[in-house]
Image (cartoon, rainbow, N blue to C red; front, side, top):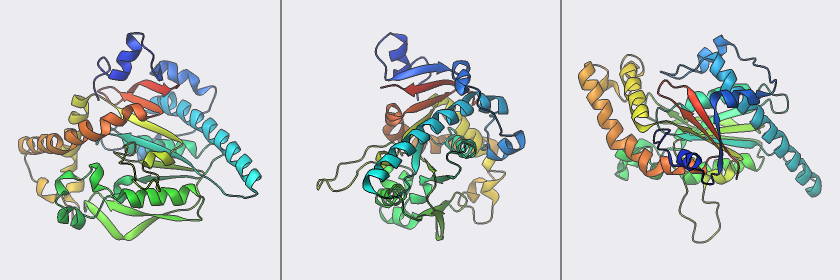
Length: 325
């Protein structure tokens, strides 16, 4: 996540070289809603905002209404294609449209995903929209500790990718129901007794750090190696590295007064830190873990996305990049 002036993708645009993306300012993007009506209310939006997010109803209309229109057109076109395939095969398999949402810790993936879920469900051709996060497919803490990688939680090797791919295969194949594990950010672990049941949605949104991450090819050539192979459309949330660090620290400071004080909270030990110690701790965690993961695994996947939402320092989306080739 370099800043807007030094981003490799945006540099390609500024020097006239061929880019796989078409670049829009927020205002230019907003004009593409083509008369689509904004039905989301301020009360509903308030429930969708993540901690520290400041997205307004006006920005939702400018950015997410055109995006929901674009995705709706994609979904309808894909449904037509699957209908033709079903007619050819003489079957009635319902194949969900799957959207991947990627980006760094603290960049706003969850807020984007929740808003998209709410707005996409209001289009009549695909009213059933589900959302899962890949946190549920992290290995349990016990497994991470046994493998000596607890300090790399959130890195690609900390996820049960085989189980995630299996889940996506079940959803994409039109299975009546597929179950996903549940992760608790309070306990900082998988809740083994809980499951999320996904039953033939029109659209499934999959949100996670590494959902666009390539994987090592199977030597046998017998399995699909990438999670993103199951996606029909992918979105990357982008911002400057320094900006995301600031958001992470601000969120950490706020969580001391809320989630860190919940019964059974894994990070309870941080709740009583004074401001200076808490900020130092947050920066240390960011630098040792999240920044390293961002630079090694997450940022390199940005150019694989179909759409990039670039955020300015005040959380507002100032540029939209839509893949054209």
